[in-house]
Structure formats: structure tokens, C-alpha cells
Image 1 (cartoon, rainbow, N blue to C red):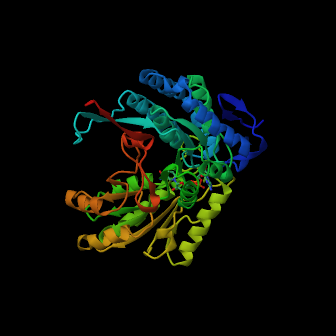
Image 2: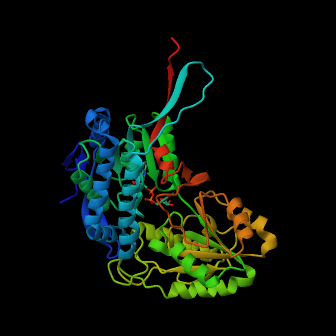
Image 3: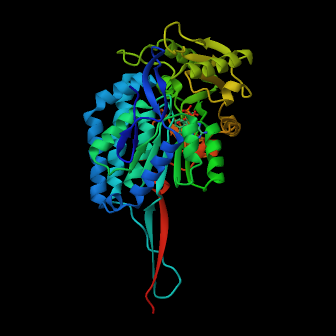
Length: 481
Ligand code: NAD
């Protein structure tokens, strides 16, 4: 039995043939997922429009809307273990990551934005027009398509769904075809929480289903997280249809700079966490390490030792530190780039191959002696592959900043140093949406998240997400008649 679609408050079968979802730790089919037809995508958009125009959702008091979001957060908590196991089986991430990052992080998002519902304020402006009150209102944009990737399916959906609902929008969700299951379960919980019919709709399917939404004239805003290549297609489809608003969270290639004065043990531990969380399938993952030559050898040795000691296994097994990659296709992508790294002359210190077991496992890999022009420094690998480069010390900071910025991406970066002046110079000079000093790249619902350059448009999380899901209306009230 395949999963179902959720349209206008009803669970319905997909009109097209279902597709398979795999358990990446086994390399075996795990579930059949409904495929929405074009008509069903249109129905979902129509349902979202009717719910947006109807009074049942629009007339809810802010406290009542907030209560629905709080209830959904409570339901996530009540089903936390079930959701965590589902996410691990479908995506592959270790259960500890599912529990702490994906499930707890999602519940926290709904609570954070539930708190915002009663605090969304406008402004009054001192316009130079006599006897006129000028004020602004923040209004929901309308129908929002939410298209998500496969690396953190539940949490990234929460990043979008929580602020969209908090601001009074309606949505059509389209999860990645590789990992649809936790999104289906979240929508079941949202239905149980009592959101009116049509406020939340879910269509499952592949890229063509997402493309229908990005070209749809009935969608007012599309929030997308995924690859930069698809982000460009979505921007084009938006331009050619109705110029729908876009929030784009795209790829990354985060640099990590390790200064001579850094606590190397802390830097190794933090960079392992920052580079290998979810087997490196993280948009902000630290991937290219610029180490002061004085500490390069020590860093490479300790990094390689740390990597080699990591326990590879099914995310469901206790003690697993590295789960599988999400799919056979993605494993092939990682393998190809590692092969290119070797051919281009990088020194393979450890790893470099598919692990000898069932499922889509890849050995954690460290390259040393990497140089700036190599493909592994520029292309997003999105796997457990760490590349070490070096620099010549504090006199080189300006050229180091230029090297760190020599990428189409600008999502995240990190700096490891005890010197405040060095950390500030680097943090100010690096063009990325988030710079972490002496810590792994941990998103938090209270802090804005998003990219410079080809890493995206706009920001999610924090108060910025309230802006992303609202239009500002200016009202001019002349009382001098
Ligand atoms: P992807 O681009 O392959 O797919 C993402 C989503 O887009 C899926 O739901 C897919 O079905 C859909 N899609 C595919 N073609 C489409 C089209 N033509 N029109 C509309 N939708 C379409 O990305 P992925 O492989 O699932 O995810 C990995 C990528 O996501 C990486 O590049 C990673 O850096 C990025 N990512 C970014 C962030 C961030 O916050 N910036 C977070 C997580 C992942």
C-alpha cells in the first residue's frame, strides 16, 4: 500500500503509479510513495487558495492560530521516537541525529513560531502629508509551495511550514521523492492538530511535480531548499509564470580556517562534527580546511585518526556515528568526485572507497596536499570527504580570505583561533550567510539562515522568516476632509 496525498483535508491515492522509497542502510525498498498527477497538483493549489480566501483560517484569532502550532509541537513530542525511527530508516542519519536534530529541532521550530503569532507587528511612519495616519500591516503572502530536499526532510520542512502557518498562509508541500515519509507523517499530525481543510496540502512526486508548482500561476510564494542547479530552474519558472516570490536555500562549500594558535584538538573535534554530521550531507558542512602550515601536519594526522575511528553502520544501531549516503545515485556522485580528487593529484590519507557492506556506505575520507584549483575544492560533494589545504601564516590573511571566497557559494564558514582580532578579520571578510568561530555549523531557529551568492535568496528562521512569508501593506488614512 502506497502512502497517500493530502488535498483539501482528505487523504487520497495518487492518480499516477506509485514510486519506491529505499532504506539506504539496507539498499532495499522500504515503502511505496504516492505519485501526484498534474490534476492533483492543481487540486492542491486550488484547495490552498480556497482555504486562504475562506474565513475559517483567516478569521482565527492570533491566539487560536498559535494554539494550533503549539498543539502540533506537542504531537511531534508525543510521537518523537516513531518519527526519529522513520527518519533514520528513510534518510539514513544516526538515530541520535534524528532524535536531537530532526525531531526535537522540528518541535522547537513550531513552538518558536507559535510564539511569534501574537507578536507580528506593523509600524507607523512619520510621512510628510498633512492629517494622515500611515501604518503598515504584515499580511500573509497567500498560497506557498514548500519544496524540500532529502538531507534533513523533517527539519527543513519545519523551517518552512512553521513560519508559513504562523503568518496565516496556506501551503502545498512537495518533499523530496527520495525521503517523503516523515513529511507524510508530519502532515498526519498536523491534521490531528486541527488545522482547517486546505490550509496544509501535500503532494508527493519527483522533480516534475516540483516543476508543476514552480510554474503554477496559483502559487504566490515558493520556498525551496535543494541544489543550486534546480534553484536556477525554479527562478526561471517563476519569472516565466507569475513572478512568484522565492526563498531559495541552495548549495554550499564551506571553508574552515585553522590558525596557528587554535586549540587543534578542539578544532579537529569541531571540524569532524561540522564536516561529517549526517555523513557530510549537510549544506553548511565544513569541506575545505585551510590550515596554518605550522600546524598542518598535526591537524592532518589528528583528523585522519579521528575519521578512521568513526563507527560506520545503520543509523538504527547503537553507537553508529556515520550512517549511509541517501541513495545509490548519490553514492555514485561522491565516488566520482573522490576519483577526480585522486586524478588531480590530491594525497589520499584515509578512506576513498565505498564501504564493503550492504547499503550505500562510503568510507570517511581525508585528502591532504590539496590545491586551490582542484575540483574537490570547488564542487559540492555532499559526502564524508574532507580536503586539507594550507596557508603561510598571519601575513597571508588577505589572500586567505580571497581563497576562502573563491567559490560560487556563500552559505557558511568557520574560523578556529583564540585571537579575537583574527577571528573578526576573517568573519568580516568571508562572504557567507553564517560564520562560526570555534564551533560546528549548528542552525538555530532564533538565528537567520541563508546564503550569499549562488547559495540562495533570502533568509529562513529567526524573525527574518516572518518577513519571508509576509507582504508589507502600507495604509494611508487621510482624516483632513
Ligand atoms: P535537489 O535539487 O535534487 O532536489 C530538491 C527538491 O527539488 C526535491 O524535492 C526535488 O524533487 C525538487 N525538484 C527537482 N527538480 C525540480 C524542478 N525542476 N522544479 C522544482 N522542484 C524540483 O536537491 P537534493 O539533492 O534533494 O538536496 C541536496 C542539495 O540541497 C544540496 O545542494 C544542498 O546543499 C542543498 N541544501 C541546502 C540547504 C540550505 O539551507 N541552503 C539545506 C539543505 C540542503
